[in-house]
Image (cartoon, rainbow, N blue to C red; front, top):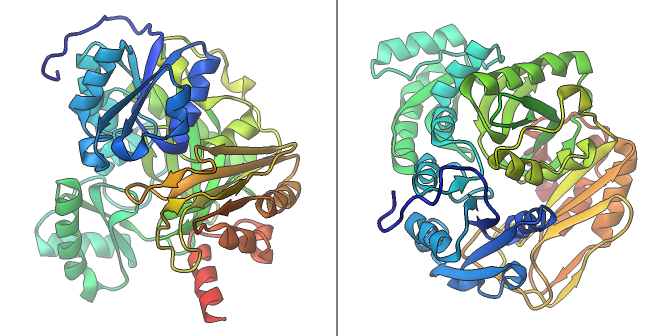
Length: 462
């Protein structure tokens, strides 16, 4: 428990939510809270004092300087802010403290409600080796490779790699965000890759534990969204394709994932639900898979709300953020698996404040802003004319989401929406997004996770 804090209550009921995040997700959570009749506390760093969601929150509090380690990652400051403002729950959004088991536990110890899974579930899924073992036990298909950490003995490591078959990928057990991993194409490169990845893992995640898996050559990145209450009920809300990635960072997402038959995805979705029941999971989460040659392979579970949740909201008709809050309040799910449907097709483009060619971040003041409107168009953002884009945080400034009856119609709608979007005063990746949606191969669908990198390489060479 944080110093000076005492438990507020042992019940999950609350009427005020402190949003421990910033940017578009802070605005999104605030909207969900208001629609549920809940009051909100917005926090900020000194760099975010002019954030528009702060002006519409019931309480707005600065918790530290621009440095995220001293503000948005300052657990004690956030817990004290909750106590001072009377907040009964904390929503961590995504990033920052959203998958921090120690913070989840500290919130619970302070008598508050963490709007997310408990510390035990976060820890279990945060350790990729333990997560893989749990998924195997629940019948979730996994990438070929042992569910144990790599030993120190060089000969044993070589034997494991030979049994899996090259190429293999070395991963940090506590890794995430595309860091702490290396592909090894041949035996001669194995030990150097392990040594480098161990050091990187130790520096980045505080643990040198590694594991090894088969490296799939041309997989797609498919996600399954789950929603669980505290009464043993769980459903999966369909699937997304997040294969359009640059340096393991998603750029465009869509739902449903094209070209995957229902009889192929159905048993995987149900296995995910069963895994959630076995580990006592609560709230929302996402199972991430590689999909190749008609088969699914589990890679990790994200124990939080994800950036791309809107495409699932658009196709399922379910407000995932509201459902997450209701689960934290202890309310049972108001739907069963049979009630979950997939209507039409949705795309999401991440609009970043960055140079579209070099991808260097672009800070500055937004001097002009035109956002698209119309049927099937949604924009999640926190920026406005006069807003200063900070150099201190992630470059995401908006999410452009469209929905239409078919994938082809959604493609057309996104093209039109992108053309109708303008952000002045800073550089953005809008030119890249517009070009991608004119690409014929992307329009056909079912591109693998390497497609965008190759497409960018060819554009630079042209």
